[in-house]
Image (cartoon, rainbow, N blue to C red; front, side, top):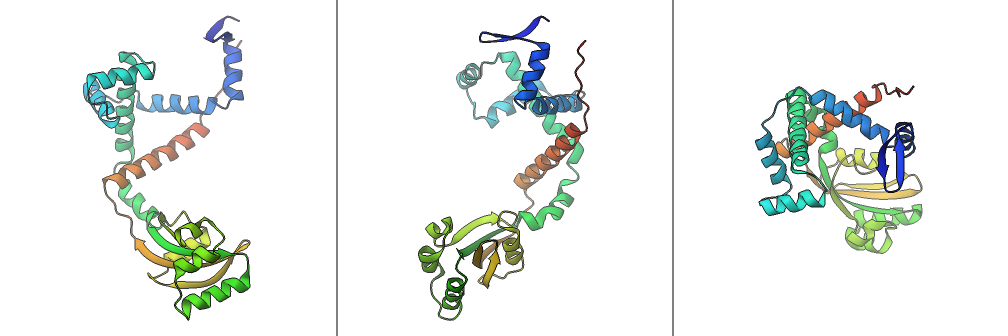
Length: 240
């Protein structure tokens, strides 16, 4: 079988190339790109506008910067234009397919998109955890000081302070506690795995449906579609 690709000293025929794609787990990525190409093949975009946006997104503001980037990525001018046009087509595909769904999707996802700033102390000693809770709740000791001295995780370096992070980031049990907390609310020691954790909500930062969030949700919906479509796409070698 004739070689179809040469890499260094290695000449690969089509069968070996397919074996390499499988072995290095590159075939799923290739399938994804083919699925995208099939989805956007009939979409029309202005090539010049696409190129300008492509360069702007990469801060390639001068012709010299554009040529340098092109050389660094070993691309011809035509290939850069094709990349830019493909990006524009994908953006239009996302907008045409899910643009009118983003607000309702945001409302579905909002509970996990809201952010919290919270304090945490964790220890494997239940007696110590109870003592620290009483010192916080009854004696008014500083959470930051106690966390620095007694917490056994990385949060000790920040005085127990974590965030702001989305509610989906902490352990699910901590996330549920914080989601129903009022700022300043202190939770008694809670066993989570091998740890006993004390948490206090410092600040609640609700997610906003702005343009940045809208683009993020469009990307999420696209990735979800791409994963599902790729998994359901038949892939079979056509070798004699």
